[in-house]
Length: 448
Ligand code: MTE
Image 1 (spheres, rainbow, N blue to C red):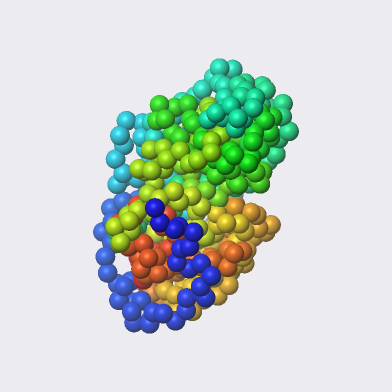
Image 2 (cartoon, protein in one colour):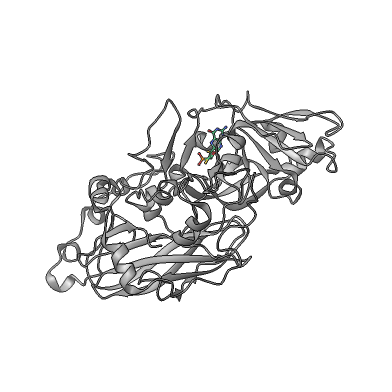
């Protein structure tokens, strides 16, 4: 086991002037265009320049359209609302590069089409180790017990009705799979932000703090320093959560997501919310919590979700998602249609608290400007940033670099690989680069 408390970038000064313009061009010039062309048709979105068309005789202004001259549809045509048919391209997608084994698969959130910080529930990414179930809430139970009776005096079994009578809270948090951006470790880039960063979503979750349940069951905090969370699906998903995270009240047993019950794909009727921690610990279809006096070393923490380091050791039992950001528009697969003004917009997040600052570069990391953060900036939630940019029609490399409230600076690929090598699958929080060429096409490149 290795010390994972420090990662490259933490408390280091912001990297600057580490790459010459010439070097950036050299890196940006090569590879991957073939991938972008072949794989991204589905995710492409165009950034359309504003144009005053009235003077050109635009019939959309000169004639009344049918929606002005005919009756609209009555209420309750759709008892549960749906997006416009014109938004049918805004969907979760499975990666063409990832095999589906049985129900074990992943679908990615279309970050390139999102506004603000909340992910609509129907677009929340999915990661199932053995498929999803639509569990009857009347039959679902949550058992809370101790690994021995002295750790938890009154083991209990709760029904959904029991749980939903308890004092509840609602909080906005991001959830990111530890494997997000995993395909980029070995330089194998995928074409769009949906596939590079789309195992990331942010919702308002509602539920009861786990602390309330443990205290209801008579937990002994002195000896009970760990919690085991277990899901009801066939994957036997089990993860250890350190008790400090529970004691501060942040870990939640949640039934609500964005104002309604959780979606079945996201754990209906009950899931664990572990703010700042990688998605695998957010156990879905939660059926059991056990209090123990040592980590459980389950298969999902001892064998999976570990990273092979250059030294041959494994980086194990990592949990916090370090500070990270990505520009979502413009991003890979999109095309800038004309020179001129663009609002460059993206998302930043940190498992250690709030985002303090996001800087954006248009020249591959040589010069940086500080972006505007959309407030209120929240703890362990996505933060939307925006910056004005006038594209002069010349090649550019857009990057964002986030800094969190602890002072941690998001690392470059060079900095991250110097410590972690290239053999990891998980926990890649390096700075993402999008190359823009004269035609306006945007593609995924890596700048060291
Ligand atoms: N919980 C159970 N019971 N089974 C699972 O397969 N997948 C985990 C976690 N919780 C999983 C689970 C993983 S790997 C992730 S990244 C998150 O759920 C994904 O949550 P989501 O599908 O709601 O986005």
